[in-house]
Image: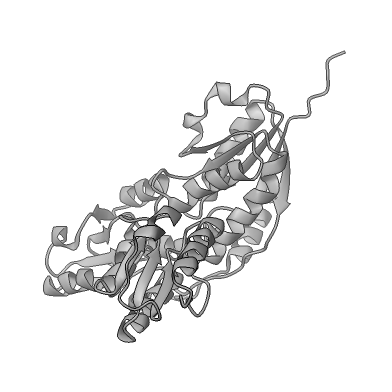
Length: 342
């Protein structure tokens, strides 16, 4: 008699798109629908190749900088945010802009402006070179130092130890960020904190969900792009919290057979820039490999939704279009009902 297989999938919930990503992607889709002209997008609208390729196929033109956009044209700024310098460059070229910066990133920008006006030294915990960090630091370049990791803390110098504040990139690991902040506070006991947590709610929720499934997983697979900070961190969090192995994949084609040797339980999650279709493709592939039992593991429920960018809403209203949006939970329920129609 053949042995009974115990193979299963632990599916982290929540996962995938956050409210800021959803808003930015929908903003590009609506702009393509409502503007009878080329829609340019500065940088990847979100860090996911599948999403960018799909929008490109629909007509969006992605550029590295605004000087690649013809004068007077329409350009959308990505979810990661931009510095005042980029806005100035866009104005010099008479570009019409749609700002799809995530509102949670905008909050950190405003904090940087406020503390700079109060003449604080700002210690920005984040990854140097990341678009979000460049945008935030650009709000107060003369006051800001980037702290890449806890190891950077020893070399930091400030003008006045009594006027120092820390801010953070929104997509970092909560644990790693607080380790850095603890070291900063040891060096600068009067270190001030932002008025509210800078780490994005979605980043926190996805990390908590991974921590829940990791101890019971022989292998954790994170769907996400290599340049997605939160996706890479999910893989690291899984390893740190008990997963025997963890890998990040862009798509199912990157799976390797040797990863599954001796594996009974596979944990699955996805970064905040990842559309659910990529997770569905992974689950289908895992079922083919014998992991057909899927057990959802929910640690939080998300129903936050941001309005579309103001500039786009105004244009939609001019054309008599409804700019209201359906909440994610309602969209999921509608999709579920449609799936059940014969």
